[in-house]
Image (cartoon, rainbow, N blue to C red; front, top):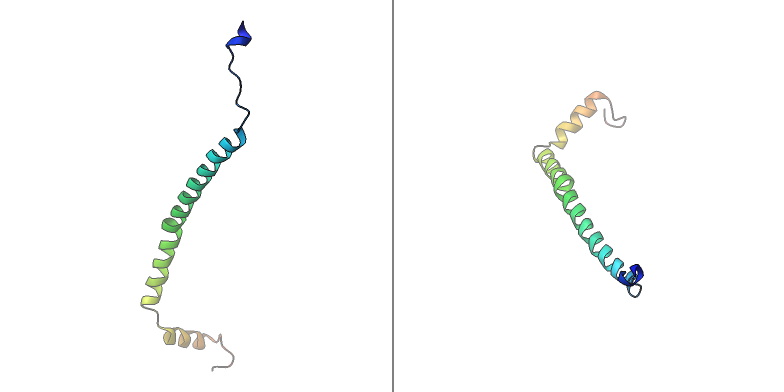
Length: 75
């Protein structure tokens, strides 16, 4: 009696069904990680570089390093 009330397990197409589910999940997770990296790491880094080079004077920096004695060829 008890065995007749149990439903048969799905055997055909089980791998394809599970793969479809996991591929979609992996795609969604990867898009989320990519968006997080872009807005949490890449954009602030790009802004920091832009802020640094906005007022950067390479000649002034060179003169400070030359006075500090870093360069051997430029005295």
